Structures are given as structure tokens and as C-alpha cells.
Image 1 (spheres, helix red, strand yellow):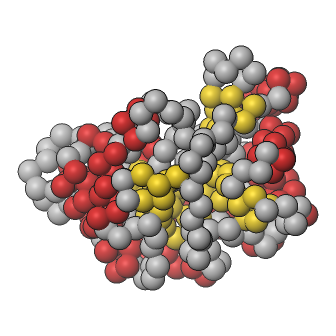
Image 2 (cartoon, rainbow, N blue to C red):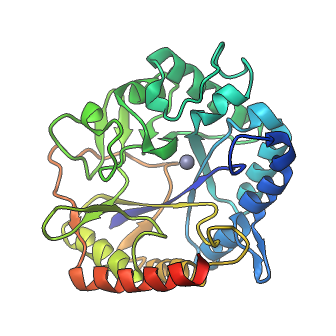
Length: 322
Ligand SMILES: [Zn+2]
């Protein structure tokens, strides 16, 4: 069986950093519920599709925004996800630090774009605050972490271990931030043990010439590319595939409409995983017995014909929604 993790980074943005308090209520509604003429396609739509297919999702939930706007909105999100019996884990965007006075870190007046910009002690403190905040909001078991924007470094892994969190899934082989620091000289594609935590890298595909890497994200790859990679990983005896998405990926860029292309793709992927549950075990990090791969296989190869189909599909989407 191939472990498949459908991970959904769940976060709120206010389209800039001005007039935050005025903007927050409408932003919260858009990012959490995502009302459209066809229904609510932020968290509710995503959760419904997962339950329609009996699949587990991992919601990496960002709590630092609540240092500015209070615990109640965070509790509301936790309840929506828990009502659907899905897993909640910890996600952090340090961009909220300077917007929250001295609550998160003392004396910070500049924007912190990446967690990897923070010292080890600052990272330990932020992860500790975020974990405690999720517990305060009603989350009972947190054993996995992902840095915002995958911007982790080896200090992040140490800080995660220091907070008694067993798993990390911040390593993005298609990204640049912290990659060389976390695993000098090699690209990680499968679980391994580094700096006291089990690292589950997000999955990527490469083109045949190995010049381009793309993350396995719902908005970034076609249905055929997903299926091609899932089958490739299964045939090669891989341990795990980590798919990524966000709470707002089923919506158009302005969040006013449902994106039919992405919606259909997500439904088809979920249906495929449901129908092929004899090969693909869609699961979370709770009760996960970690495996460690001493040798790291080469990244999966995206099929060039399927990449062409995706590019055509993305062009249609761009013309329709931009
Ligand atoms: Zn994020």
C-alpha cells in the first residue's frame, strides 16, 4: 500500500496589511466559507468532497492570525473541521508576528516573511505558541507541522522536535528556501529522520529533462498527471505521497466563484483514490508508524503528453477567471 496524504494548508489573508481590522470579517468569510452562487467552496466544499469519498484529509491550520483577531474565529474553524471528523495539524505564517504587538515575539516591528528568518529560540517560541493556541481552540492531538510557504530550515526541525511534534512536512523539493540546509547534497522525496523529527517531504514531479520541478498541488497539476504519479509511486514501491492544497483552492483567484476546473479535478482525484483503496491508503499523521528511507529515490517524472494537456487546461482556466 502507498500512503497518500491529502494536506490542506488552512489560512486567512486580508489582501494586504492595511486596515486589517476593517477587512478581517469579510476576509474570514471568504477564506473560511467561500460563498458562491453554487455553494460554500472554501472549507465546507473541500470537507464535503472528502467525506463524500470517505477520505481522510490533514488540515494544517494557521493559528497566528488569532493573536491579532482573538480566539473565537479560530475556534469556529476548528469546529467546522472537527464536525467533519478530519485531522488538524499545525501550520505557521510568521507574517502575523509584527501585526500582534508583543504577543508572539517581543520587539518585532518588521514583517517576517519566512519562519527560516527566525532564530532557533524564536522558532521554538512561535511553534509553542501556535500549538498551545490550537489546543486552547479545541484541538486535542497535534503531531505534525508545516512551515508557511514551506520556508523551513534545519532550526525549524529542531524547534519542531523541541515542541514534542513527531512529524514535519515542510520540505518542498521544488522550492528553494532551506532545502540545502535541511538536507545538504541530496533531494528528499521520501520520509526520513532529520534533527529529531520524521520529515515527510511534499511530493513533486519533474519533466523528463529534469530541468523543471512541480509540486503535486491540486491547482498545479492535471488529473492525468496526478494519476500517472500515484501509479508510478505505487509501482516503484514508494512509502508515501504528500499532495498539497489550500482552503481556498476550489475558488477563483478573486474568491467570488467556484473554479469548475479545479473542483472537477479534485473530485476526480478523490473518486480515483476511493475506487483504488486496495493500493492507496489515504490517511493522516495520527497513528502513523514512521518509516525511514536511507536512500532517496529520484523524483517522479510527469508524462510530457499529460503536461501538454495540463497547460491547455490552465490556459482555459486563465482565460475564464482572469
Ligand atoms: Zn500557508
